[in-house]
Image (cartoon, rainbow, N blue to C red; front, side, top):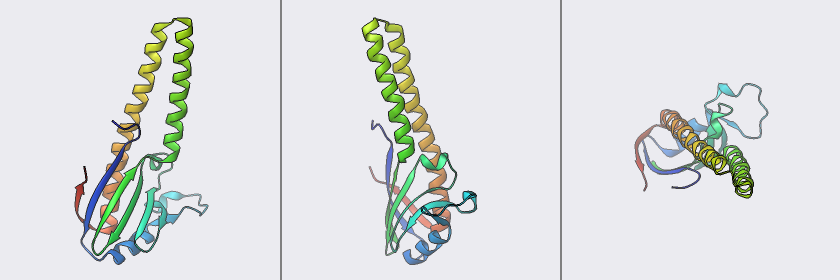
Length: 155
């Protein structure tokens, strides 16, 4: 099991990839823009001629997954990974837990070690659940916008 979840897909489009990219541009805010209401668009990110890197426009849940894709000739690849903010928060929690475990070892408080290890495992479980739900939502919106005909998981 990886610490941070990732998924890879191969996709086939209903239409031409240039049309799909233009529709994705219409539904995506630029990362550099300062906007008070991000919920008007589906995604925030960067869309280029045949590549994109977007996340959902919802403030906190959009950070759970980042969608990277490349589209060419009606086909493409999609890589979904955990966002940097969620990675940073998780690493901070794990580092606090590890420092607590080291302190508990010196104190020989084994019950505290169990609680800290369980805290780390529960946080990893919560991150995995959040990633799965937000990924499903992100893939559904992306499918709706760019017109994905088939989506195959790459093992």
